[in-house]
Image (cartoon, rainbow, N blue to C red; front, side):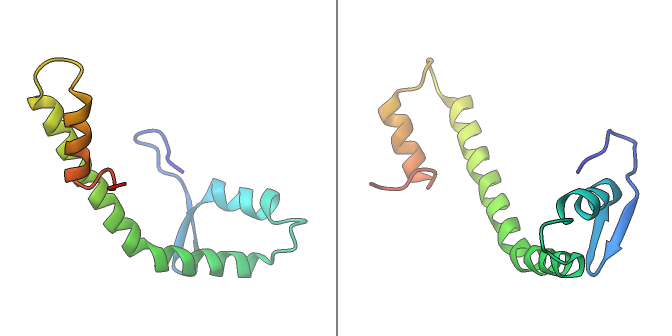
Length: 101
């Protein structure tokens, strides 16, 4: 949950997480009641999942940034518009953006 620039959201600390107060309130008062899920169990599970998958998520975001940079460079250097679809598909396969069929 992001706040407008210059606005700090109050945070609630639960285990190893710092949750934006509005999100915490929503989960506690709207999402969990009637779901059969205990609040402590929910937050512990979310904490575990975030910490388990955070390293892989960082890797994937870094790879996405690499691919985006390569695509941007391709388009900056491409002559004519639109790009030749066969050449563009070849390029996307070479950088790993598209998988080989």
